[in-house]
Length: 261
Image 1 (tube, helix red, strand yellow):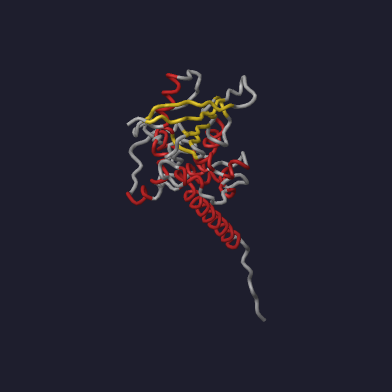
Image 2 (cartoon, rainbow, N blue to C red; image 1 turned 135 degrees about the horizontal axis):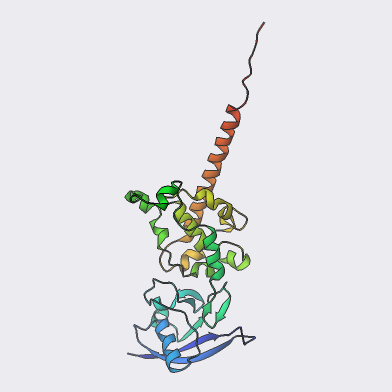
């Protein structure tokens, strides 16, 4: 059976408007209707000016992230009646600049992502440029990072993160998760190249483990965990480097010859 549900939708065009407004729409939904379905119905039948970003409709592309009843969710993955609410509040993700209505700007987030070099880095440059075969990997090596490779870059974690809301330069959970995913890959040797960014004032140490990022992740990636593992990886690397440097210093000292009467 279909039911009428009221949607209160955030409307704001920064290029021509000073303050945002809320528009109220009524939509008939059934048990299979998602929030994205309802918003597209509003756009088609009631308000053609409504701006929405979406693509796959299967919770794979991560394009339709937004605040639904105060929580970060994917609109295509959220069924209206499962919210158990007569009024559905829909607004853009927090912690991002608003482009228009429900569409936010991810430019800064993707710029931070590029800074951590989210790809395999190896010392054998010639082999990478002219590969002669596959880089083999054991099943247990794959399992060590597989969970963290499922990120769809929807940005929900960064919207929920309290550190991102207070420190705009913080790399964000999504970016740090990417850094760990590749640094933990047995085929990668690029941690040393990522250290200047992730082991910095606005890097992984700004995370206070609120775990809000993991609670909203639609794919179960658990970026809060990957950030803690990244901290451990950095600490272990730095301790090893310092120990090795100390050994080199001691071994390079001139030998003292003792003479006895």
